[in-house]
Length: 343
Length: 284
Image 1 (cartoon, rainbow over the protein chains, first blue to last red):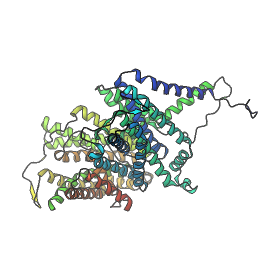
Image 2: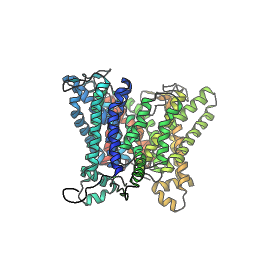
Image 3: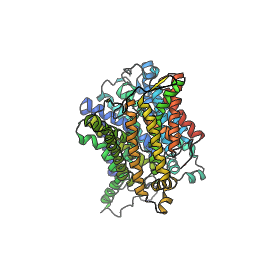
Image 4: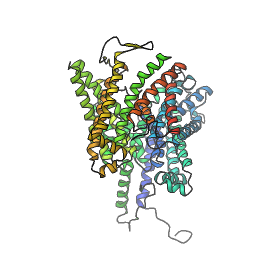
């Protein structure tokens, strides 16, 4: 009995197992990669950085209904800013992560401002043009990108600790990754998350209810930019030697493919899609035809046959497991999907 | 200065042709086809193989390459666009990018990723316009573009198929209600766009560094031409492409700063979206 005298709420067994599985997954993600080779650890770190950037676009596309084909620029510009400042001040790039987030939010807001007036495919073209223009103009400036070989940033340090290998630095990237997941979870559950969903699904109703549509759209671009800025700063911390070739415009399309493959929902689908579209080519460097065609063919098949995306598949799987674990433990609690999940 | 304008004009023809290709599928399906460039790339490489390696007559190689483009375009509609007809346009757009990736993988594995020599389709001394030597291949692009636009105009305005295309461009749902077979018309539209993609790539290949990635540097200009032209107007896209080419050449001449051309294209797109969101030509 609770203090108020009412029966204590039991956490459904399925949900408890889910939380346990997530915690186990996070711990495994922390402990396993550093046990493997330096190059595998480095690639896992790259995958985490990519997933953080993709989460930002996921919020923009799948939660807010907006679009950006400039996401690679959202990542690259803050990365170069952090690298340039780190090299100039001889400061640890880890300390400059907030700068990357702020620059990312700023550039996201600027592109968002340009996209506000556009509608439909115009948004795609406006953001693509903005991304290409920033890439071609700023990524050719030596004061930002450094010499042709790229800017070398100082070895990352924090609280007197020096991270001079991928294995030692991995924990920093892991913490930043978890921070990004937590931020996404918090936004998803917040008034902002509900507002974004409302603006996406029923903009007229939202406007009638007093939701500032333009403000929310701008906020979506700003948050997406901030997440991309975090990913950019993480790139600088992790890679430590950046050139303009590190952020090709085509990566913006890869991010978009990832979030469309993920589908509406939380970040689980984004992580799976990142693994399949970015991680598989990263870890399997085989030149066999099968692996070359795997990405585009699986994407086309997923888009055309299973339209709810990986998040939809995950929800089906989860509901099935919950139902299974609820059997024999009293009446099953009907799963009430959150507003965003029920889309 | 006039030589800059002439050069910009011929570069603009390339952008205009790409813009026309984008408009064709947008009119029929409300989809920006990101596989347009890659479809043309496959057609152009097939043409190159048949013409230079298999020594087929130019006309026959051209016909086969155009047919390959049409088949790829039709297959894109049949297997990718049609199953997604009821999905958000963003999903379809992303799916066309997946098709582009697939074609890119195929092209890269078959023909490699390095630029190849693409011989000019015509030879000769060329002519001089405003003190600028205009190559025969540039003149061919001009003539080919005009012929292509005339052909498209004839298809759209003089044939029953064109009438259906225009009806679908205005309102696909209403067109279906009055008996237009929307599915078949969409298939033919995508096949037509695929054929145009092949012709475009074959025309411009000798003038650019041609590789499987040739569209990367041209994609934004082609899309900008389509957007500025109003997304529905073939002539508008073509005229916008030429305008972009000339403006770009003039700006680069006045201030030769790296990346300035892309800033100008972005500014043009932004200006159109802010001032005239429907594009410079409003037509369906």
